Image 1: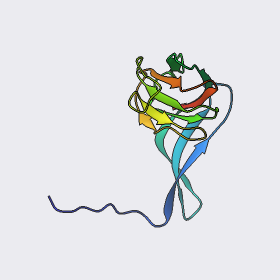
Image 2: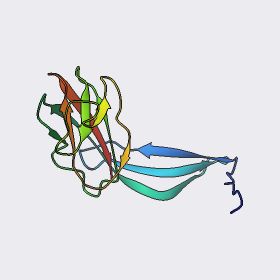
Image 3: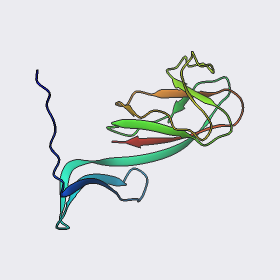
Image 4: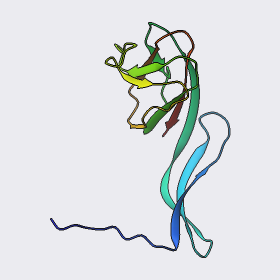
Length: 134
């Protein structure tokens, strides 16, 4: 197969517009601004939900307990004072037990449905801010 290249219109650039409001009602819409100042909606939209979860030391905690309806993406930020790990129900507080998220670090973004991800802290002070988009 020959190499193929995408062509981008140099007069446009992608943008993300977010509207904040009551929980589960903030809607994001992706669009493109043209050089003439016009704006075209591209059809990708959904709800954004941010939840702060205290993560226990020694016990896997659901992130969050109830997922956002029709969730597409999940990521989290470790705003606590303890290193945390992400994984399934059997996640452990070790680098072989899950994906580590250090303090003041982000987890990888995961494109997923409504499966539950669990977190566990290595010591007391685990706090993860979960960011979900439908």
